[in-house]
Picture 1 (cartoon, rainbow, N blue to C red):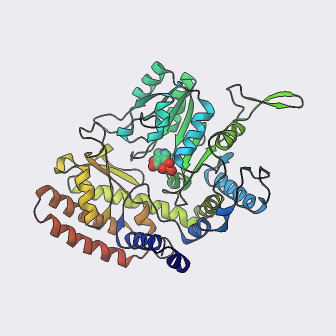
Picture 2 (cartoon, rainbow, N blue to C red; picture 1 turned 180 degrees about the horizontal axis):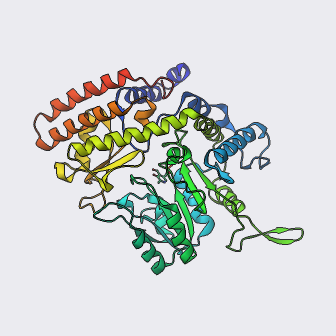
Picture 3 (cartoon, rainbow, N blue to C red; picture 1 turned 60 degrees about the vertical axis):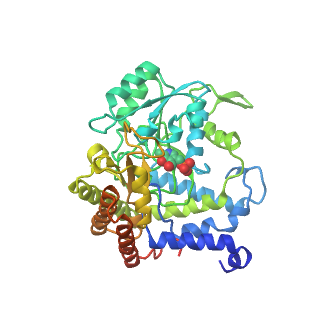
Length: 438
Ligand code: PLP
């Protein structure tokens, strides 16, 4: 950083301030984590300089012998970690990974099904403001108003009526597991492909703590930077490769041959939607997968889940309404309507108190996405800092103090300042140490 400081004071300062923010405040955004120093060293390495269009051993550029080593290691480690036969580690993001699968198996106008964005789904699962909802004929299934759980009977009913080509299961704000087997049975009934997007719980799935999508889904996509704790990026996996049933062939000396699905997806990622892969990020993915294969990562994942359970229990004891009644993973969605504050106000007040969360729509929300009735809280980042159940309960008390002050309007500023000091102290006891940017 000495060189950056000399050359570009403005960016140096922005990074230094971000470093301080990450160090001194509580990170509870469910999709964030602190990558290790080793992961960040790979991200900041000379591999950023290399063009490597193509795949290991089959590149369009010379000089790829060392980036090939990195990509091969990333692929081998990912296969071991998730128990899959095929992986493509090149998608620049989770959204690109999903685009890769959708473009591989669908034609414009084909029907798809995904979880409603307002019920916890992701933009790329068919939202009208995203390519997935604009190019394809998207139908959104939801959660039950009473239980907050995905209603599989309704999923089946919708599948039978819209006959989708692809069903997507997975979410950004759903605190329960997915019944991949039941989804596959529905997909098989209507001849649909099934894709699981495990972006959020990938680390917990890798650790064997949640249902495994691999035996049941045709495709599994993920981001690498959430509970998996790697660099920002995406990937596509298949438990088992298979001959594509779409009639896509490749010319050979002996005539046309049906392409394997893996070949279709590889070609869709590059040259279909991407050019040169981010080889520094792929190297960092390999480092992160190496970390996730160690026994310590399983301990980490177990703690992430225990911390979330402890938080949920404490929230419930203080009268908070958690959508679906609790959590089985690393996150929970709080419906704040009974507390008299909106998601927007809660997010802003908590920010003033040094606690970072995001406002979030709750199912059947009556407020706009800019206001919302809820907040989403996750434990992946705080657990990386070494926080345990006791800190989780303390954090809930701090959140409650801020929300109570926000609702009553009494001394809100003073309460935020007090909580901010408490947060700073809590963080000082548990430095980012090996993890994080310091
Ligand atoms: N899929 C799910 C379920 C997500 O939660 C996210 C990100 O929040 C993504 C995909 C997209 O990932 P990215 O932000 O890397 O495009």
